[in-house]
Length: 125
Image (cartoon, rainbow, N blue to C red):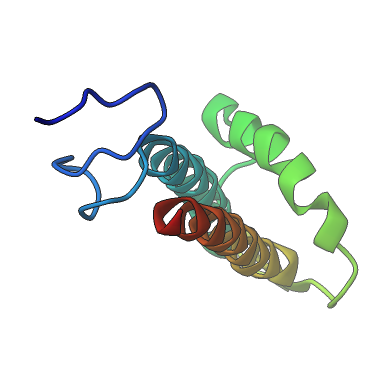
C-alpha cells in the first residue's frame, strides 16, 4: 500500500525535475534561473545599447539604464570604460556590465548547487 506524500516531500513523477527531486528544490531552481534570465536579458540589452551608441535621451533606453545601473554599480570601476566617439553617437564598452553578467550567473549557480546539496541530503534520509 502506497502512502500519500506530504507537503514538501519528493515528487517522483514531476515533469519539471529529475525523479526523486523534492518539490521545493524544483520550484526554487526554477525561480532562481527565471530571475537570472530576466537580469541577464536586461544586462545584455544594456551592453548592446551602449555598444551601438543608443540615444540615452530615449525613454526606453534611459529606463533600461536606470534599472540596470544598480545591478552594475558594484562592478563599476574595476576596469576602465572604453568610449569611442563617432560622428553621430558615442559607442561605449562597459566591462562592468560583462562582469555583472558573469558574477550574477555564478551566484545563481552557487545558490542552486547549495540547494541541491540540501536536496540530496533529504533524499538520502
